Image 1 (cartoon, rainbow, N blue to C red):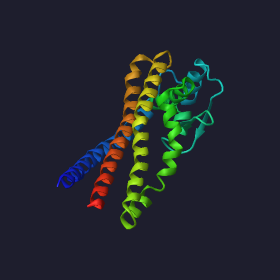
Image 2: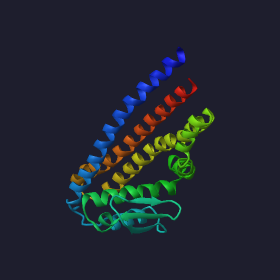
Image 3: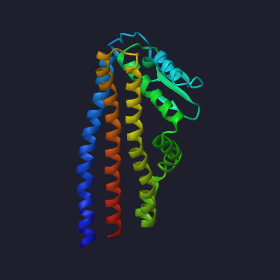
Length: 232
């Protein structure tokens, strides 16, 4: 009876959390798209492009060996810690908009974290390959858990815990990178009346990571509920 009540509670919890997570996710995607599109049309008064902003921030922090490269796609911007390269999408690399300089500064924020040895970033970078590898087998293990033995389902849940951990660690990494970006922009790279616009762009992007974390928690609860049913 106790076990049935407990897993029944999990069933209810994961469904409620999933609905909330999906709502936040849809809203986050809308905010990112609308904010980026809006401020992509608003030029920065400094007239610096995203690539120039990235180079200036890197150089002023002594990271002369970190390269800045263009990359295809939209919102594909990222920092590659293995190659020590900041990669910016074309709109960001060549653009001189508020959105372009904000995103460029955010990605450089990750390079600053890397150079400093920022612990959450190091943890995320170290577990990322393990999580990526393990995620390929989770649902195979879940199926085997129902067909062969509950052991495989529990192993799948253990691997999924790695994904949840990765999402949780990602939150401080992204928020911290945005704070670093705003600090750098405030120091002579954009005018003060443009900082609020930069905050809106970066806050919208951060919301997508919050949504991803909520979805991962909801999925974990669903797997726990499945494990409870399998044991019953």
